[in-house]
Figure 1 (cartoon, rainbow, N blue to C red):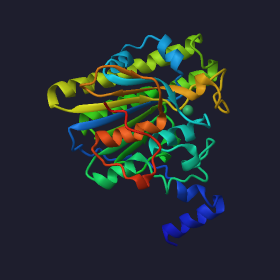
Figure 2: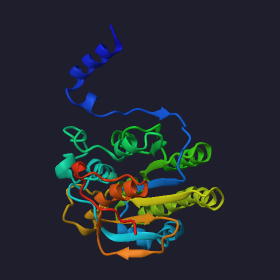
Figure 3: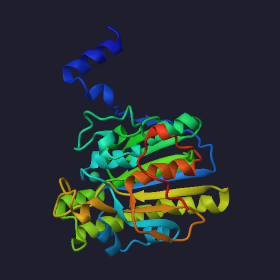
Figure 4: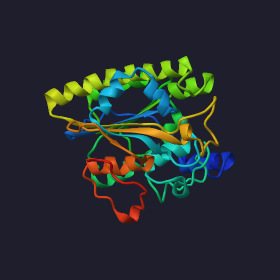
Amino acid sequence: MKKEILFSLFCIVLSLTSCKENRLDVRTDCVNGQSQKKVLFIGLDGCRTDALLAANTPALDSLMNQAVVSLHCDRGAHTVSVPGWSTLLHGVNPDKHSLTSNSFRGNNYKRYPDLFHYINLYHSDLSLATITHWADFLRITTFEDYANFFKTDEKVKDDAIRLIENCTPDVLLLHFDDIDGAGHNKGFAPNIPEYIQSIEYNDQLTQEIMEVIYQREATLNEEWLVIVATDHGGNGTGHGGQDDLEETRFVFLIVRTPQQSRVDIPSSHNVDVMPTILEYLQIPINDDWDLDGRSLLQ
Ligand SMILES: [Zn+2]
């Protein structure tokens, strides 16, 4: 029997929706980047803004000094991870992508595709990569040349540096999970030492990655847009069902480009990330895409 038929039968037995709607595949082709303009997206899962500001974070502070910064960014309703990352990387709110819990079932990704879908439409030669500490993150985007999952934030960082040095993807999405883990274990709050330590640890990982990028900008004429974002904050040891809580719903957003001086904007939304990246890559946004945000580049 053909593999496809076996797979279809497997899907029918398991569920009618979960198999065909979302992929979860690891790809390990290190495809050489083509563009001098690069994008690095750093996703810090569950990082609350007041805790970020309380922590000692020299690497993120340096990024903020070259960035459009929002410390009151609406991440939208349904304060869990799948809707959160979908909003960031599909550029629309949950009323459009249709995800309201930590499940991909019933998603409207076909009508509202991800960032990489649109990049691939215009620049199919660009090298696209995702590295994550949370396997389901690989279900959110498509068209990666390289997609990989690791069990620690440190390994995500190590692999990111290896990839940047070996083939330098044009767009690299990173997802780190330790901050969210510390929040669930000990509490999402600035007065929880373990939570603060996890943010400071991620700052060190960011520093190691940025040292490589700063060096490349200085010597290879590359220009990196670096976006640091999160999918939600938290309260107590959770974050679900907290649409009305400031510390869970309103997050930070850092949009760093090499020539930018720090500009603080009073408000933004996580749906602004996708138009920002598309504009940076000079991809014209079509009204038919029905995106909810606006570019934050200045
Ligand atoms: Zn999350």
